[in-house]
Length: 107
Image (tube, rainbow, N blue to C red; front, side, top):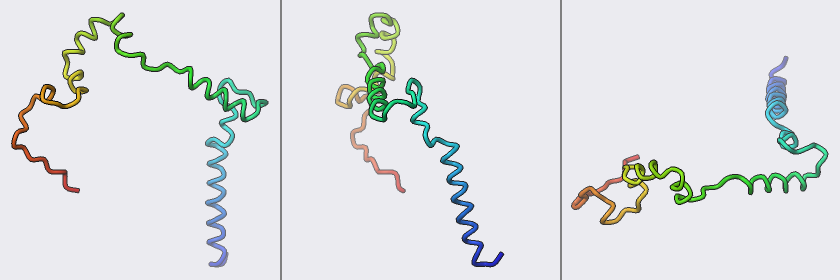
């Protein structure tokens, strides 16, 4: 093999590995998503995917949890985790930072 042929062989090898990777790792996986058949049009599949995304559970708020988990909520309300989520103000910041200078961490 001559010196001029080596780059061509290298490029061909890289291309073959890349193509094999695409083939093994997911080209066409979207068509095999659960609940979707290969016979449906792309638009129908997209609308089904969006519909399933809209029906996923969401956070329903603290009040819904209190009904069944009153004891856990009572313990949480007095915890450091509860106070860590409070917005900083004169009542929520408990340390004395008067006269303190903050410097950004040197990069």
